[in-house]
Length: 82
Image (cartoon, rainbow, N blue to C red; front, side, top):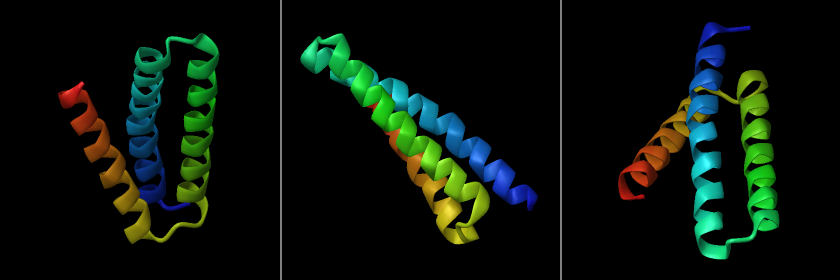
């Protein structure tokens, strides 16, 4: 396995965990119900897990690094705004 795939997946996972937590916090602020928060967290984590698995196995380099950049930018913006 190429080392760039491992690095991209690690960066994607780190930024993705932040996005999952931010998603759960926003849902908690808007709905206030723990069941909705748990469902949104499970959906976001599953999407992150699928993206990480696809990144480490089959995505081309350009798309993988593009996903890393998008996740990093979105997480940074949400942290600055929120």
